[in-house]
Length: 226
Image 1 (spheres, rainbow, N blue to C red):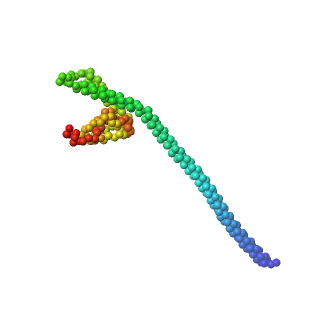
Image 2 (cartoon, helix red, strand yellow):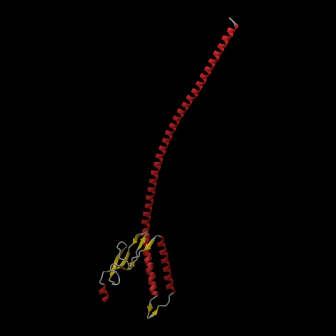
Image 3 (cartoon, one colour):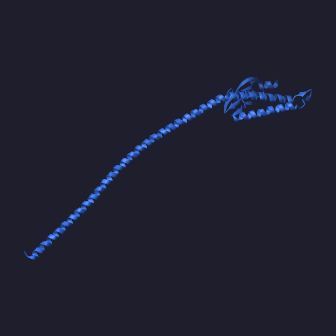
């Protein structure tokens, strides 16, 4: 065979091999890009699954926390009611125990006030047209009573015990009781003209009713003419 023919065949075969190698390289490159894209899709799908799983876990955790918070809120409300009930019972017990003591203090105050009033009247009394001479012992005893009375009034005031103001006002059976009546044309019918025994309130509630003298209805014209 001629050498030129051989060279021509070899050149063609070599060109053929080069073209086949280029196509194979392109196929390899195309297969790698497809493989990378598939891997990306797989990773995205897996990530989406993980996100859904995590979201479900978070939702379950929030539901559990919400249940716990609701239970804590109910327990807190129940505890507040129990504390308020205990405080109310404590106040009621304290009032039950303190009320008799306050009434005894009021009786003591009545005696002190009556003694101080009597000693004052004795100090102002007149004998045969002349005033009684000063008595240092009587004055000291009266001053001691008045001092004790003032201390007792401060003690009662600190315990929210206050005297009732009923004189000159219409009689109210909710805070007083009538021990006597008078007919005084200068006063309104049914008005309290005198308080025989003082009444007191405690924290805005009646502690001891007042014993009062009430003016009876009468004819003012008749009273004035008589």
